[in-house]
Amino acid sequence: MSQQILRYRPDDAPPEWEAVADGVRMLVAAVAEQVRYPVMLVLRVTSALAVSAERAGLPRDPAVWLEQRTISRYLSGATDLKGSTVQKYASVLARVHEALVWVERSEAPRPRLRAARSRAVPYDVSELTRLDVWARALPDSTTGRRSALALIALGAGCGLMPGEITATRGSDIVPLPSGALAISVPESTRLVICRSLWEEGLADLAQVAGDDYLFAPGRKVSGAKNLVSNWTKRNESADPRVPRLDAQRLRSTWIVALLRDRVPANLIAGAAGLKSTAALDPYHRWVPAPGQDAAVRLLRGWA
Image (tube, one colour):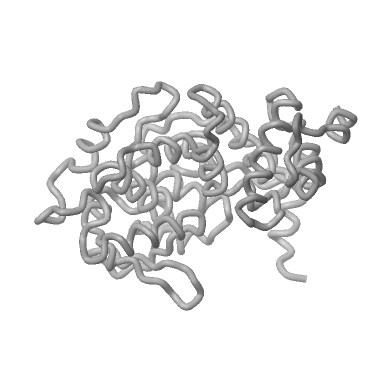
């Protein structure tokens, strides 16, 4: 396998290939054992992503290549990929991203997701990528693409509940001097900060919306009952590989991501509007224990 990686060169390699070749080879070598796809497929897909990022002027950094926005930009602009190929590439890149995270943290492989009785199952990276690609392919209208992207950003990026999503306006998104985005949640004083992955997209949506609602703008009221669930039913993808968009699953995704990043439980509970950290207990089934190296770093603290 190592020789395959070291000798790999794309057919009709573009001029940008030499600039990203070493990074691609090192990335694939690091994750090959954890990604259950043929190594040549992983090399081909990762190379195409890296070349796309190089053309866009992004840093030559695998972590940047594997950001969701970079993957979405590449897949949306890859006119040579059709139908099922787009979905396969999205799945490969999601697995590579996931494997790289676990390798860097020295953590055990992520456990299989199992449905919880009391909490919605979080989306995995592959599902989020597919939802993002699907959302960007919707008609460019207030109740199409804009509403879909707003729902994903406010749910998976900010952890808002359905009623809070429908009540949030563009003017409720407040840029901080650090570059972070704070969300002024209607009828709440809690501190909610958008996850960095969704900052750019949410800032763009807020600028366009202004004082109007981010989700389903143009309404006279903050939101009728079941506004989000009715919208998702009307706009459900016909492709069975694209999961149904669900506000509760988006919120679970946000909470679990924070827990996996070892954010203090009291901060998560406060941002989520939960009464106590005990309410986070059901989500821990999706949070693996850290590996030994990661445990040592966490327990040791700054040296």
